[in-house]
Image (cartoon, rainbow, N blue to C red; front, side):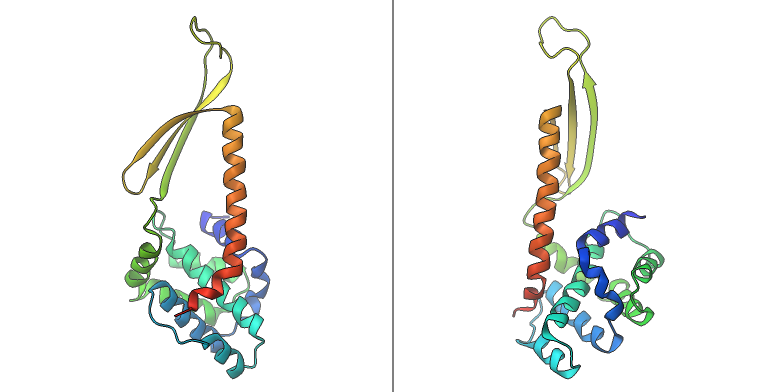
Length: 205
């Protein structure tokens, strides 16, 4: 499994089960709305309700379909440090049972003329904080020392590099490292919950 596949599966969560329900006829307007949300263009109020009525789809289903489309676009565009090739993008969605028509529409948007505008829009929405682009670490064990009590106690040296060029180097004990790992995992789970609940609200004008 590629990194893109694993990130997309994690971001979608249990919403992968609805991918086979997506049809080209109503996916196209949902893609257009998602593009406008990312590029911060004006979106008409109540547009999802009108799509629900036009295609006779329950409102909650339209909300979930839009959330899926928006998540696919955001996960892909957010991977600036590792470019995902069109073949990998299409294969990943095909394995998730998305129809070929819908895959082509998404691929056309992501790799077409709108791509620079989408990347700029996503960067503008998230540029307030620096992004972690590299994390290196190694384990040190002091075998003998006349001034330290931590002999034979492993500790971890970490080096974080951010997209603004800043580097942070720090040391962690094993207990603090496990605490950091647990905290990050918890935050990721909570972020996914919030994202799933609020993705449809991105269409607000």
